[in-house]
Structure formats: structure tokens, C-alpha cells
Amino acid sequence: MKKIPFSPPDITEEEIAEVVDTLRSGWITTGPKTKRFEAMISEYCGVEKTICLNSATAGLELVLRLFDIGPGDEVITTPYTFAATANVIIHTGATPVFVDVKPDQFNIDPDAIARAITHKTKAVIPVDFAGFPCDYKEIYTVLNDKKHVYHPKPKTLQELINRPLVLIDAAHSFGSSYNGKKSGNLGDFSVFSFHAVKNLTTSEGGAITFNAIGDATSDELYKKLQLLSLHGQSKDAFTKMKAGGWFYDIAIAGYKYNMTDIAASLGIVQLKRFNDMQVVRKSLYEKYISLLSNDSRIILPDFNAKDKVYSYHLMPIRIKNADEKMRSSIIEFAAEKNIALNVHFIPVTMHPAYTSLGYSITGTPHAYNSYHNEITLPLYSTMTLDDVDCVVSVLHDALESILNQ
Image (cartoon, rainbow, N blue to C red; front, side, top):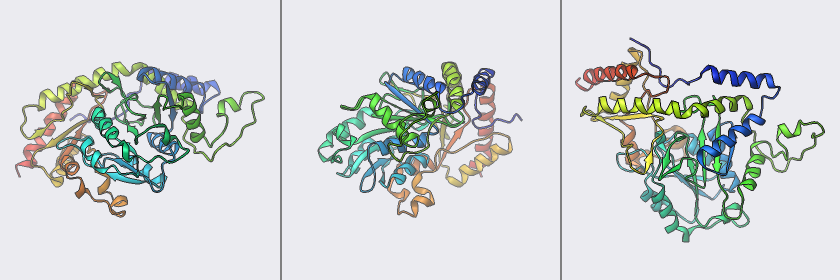
């Protein structure tokens, strides 16, 4: 049987040629191609500014740092995500507050956010699971209704907004939209991932997208994020290396989170090809839905809201009456047939790093209910419709073999 991996990158000769051009240019770290990629993302998402970084994790942390979120503060998020979403909160010294997802869904429940807000709440990090946007109208309504308990720190950017910051973990949702607005332009700040398995890749990389916030222009915010992302240098490396431009100041004790031009070269071509790759992903998703919709053993994702466009990043399904052991057996069965399946995600509050801090999945039962029988099927732009037939055939064989034991 044909080997079908889970999510290989879609790299063509065009990406390779762009990278070679960069290698031959004499400039391979942050420089003109990174700036070009930033401009392309801003145009695509309809935002004023983008700053590219070495990961989405870096982007999430930098925004929290930009807003002086730290010890004594609380940040509300979901346990139904990869650990990076929560780890960055820990890094700043703030306290993660985990709230549940909507029943039988994967995205954060705005009503649960409302119940968790206190005077310590400085930010909310919704996660667009699989590339399906959260309910942002509901989230903003909740935050505005609760703004009377918001206590910003004096003389910080927190004073620019009269409610907790909305920092979207959009790692999965490049290409998604909500109420006609592109992902990247739905929160105060949005953070994308361009990791190798994403629907647009730079091998490793990420980006923050944003507009002006209150009296702070997007140019001002960009300069602050640039300082944070590259050691607090008053000049980026490209400017500093120009003839006579050696002098620089370290304005703050910043980090080393910049994107390279090599990575941006991949992104430039990937973004040019993005719409075509999405057409393929959509066709694969629709084929899965067609083949699986009449199987009563399978719970399909509800990604059909009229106000939302899904990015086709993941194909998550749930198996009725399956437990974690059965789910593992199904994945192992498929692996023996050379089909790679996956799980998204083990909730953050089930990991030792968080149970050791006193967190537990018991406080978010809907998150556990969505996780314990979830399986993610392969979905990528070099996959074929015949591959979908093969995956579904093996899945059916696995269900017959394991659920009937």
C-alpha cells in the first residue's frame, strides 16, 4: 500500500530558486527579503503592519512583553492547543487561566471567558484550532461588557485599550476569514506560524500582524517589536552593515527572535502559490466529508459557519464510543498500513509541566471530551484525491477491526 505521510511541506523548484537567489545575494539574515515578505503578508491580511520572526511562539511572547504583562497578571486561554500558547504566559511570569471550549467543539467558549475575567486579567489568547476562527464577535462583546473590572498598569501600553488585550494564536489560520475579514486582522494582534507542517511554510518562522492601537501608530508598535525581537538594537543588521552605518545603541535588553532572509525567501514564493495550494486543500477536505458523512461511527468537524472561512489546515475527526486506548489502536493500525494519523491536541493541562503547577483537565470537561477520541487525518497540498480514498479505506478497516473487538 502507498505510504501517506501526515503533513510534508509543499516545496517546488520556485521556492528552491528563490532560496538560491538569496544565498547568492550575499545577504542571508534579516534583510530586504524579510521586509518584502512582511509587506506581502500585510497586503494579504489587510493590516497596517507585519513583523516576521523565527516562530509563532516568539510572536506570542513578544506581544505579551510589549504590553508589560507579567507577574501578578492573568492571561485567559484554552487548554485545547499546543503547549507554546501557554508556555509564553509562563515565560513572562503571568498566570495562565484555562477555560473550556464550546461543547463538542474545539474553540474557546466566550461564556467561559466571561466567567474567568478578574481585575488581574490583562489578555485573552483565543486559538483558531485547525484554522477555524473563534467566535470573535462574542469574545469582544464579553470583554467590553467586563471592561469595568479591567485595571491597566500605569504608563504602559495597557492603558491604550479599555479592556484585556485580544492576542490571537492564529498558528493554524493563515487564509481563514471571519465576517469578511482575513485572519491576521481579527484581534488587537494576531500571530501566525510558518512551521514546516503549516499551510504556508518558511521551514521555521512566524509573524505578528497588527494595526494602530489607540494613540500608538502601527509604525511605533513595529519599532518597539523590532527592538524586542533583535537584542534591543537601534538598527537592524541590514541597516547596520551599510557602509558607515556601524554605530548602534542597545535601547532595551531584547531577544533574538528575528526571521532570516533564507526563511523569508520560502515564504515569498509560498504566498504567491498560496491560493492554488488552498484550492487543493479544500478539494481534499470536501472529499473526506463526502466519504465520511454517512459513517455513524465518525463525528465530523463543524467547520461550515456562514460567517467563517476555514483554512483547511487540519482534518480532525472524532470516533464515537472510542476511548484513548481505542484511538491509539486505530492510529497504530493505520501506521502498519503506512498511513500516518495524528492527534490534535493533548490538552495543555494534561501535561506534567502543568499538572505539576496544579492544573487539571477536570476543570475543562468539554476539552477532554473533544480530545479523548480525536484523530487528525492527513491533509496537505501535495496529497491527491486517490490518497484520500486510501486513508478512508484504511480508517474503515481500522474501525471494523478495533471497535468490534
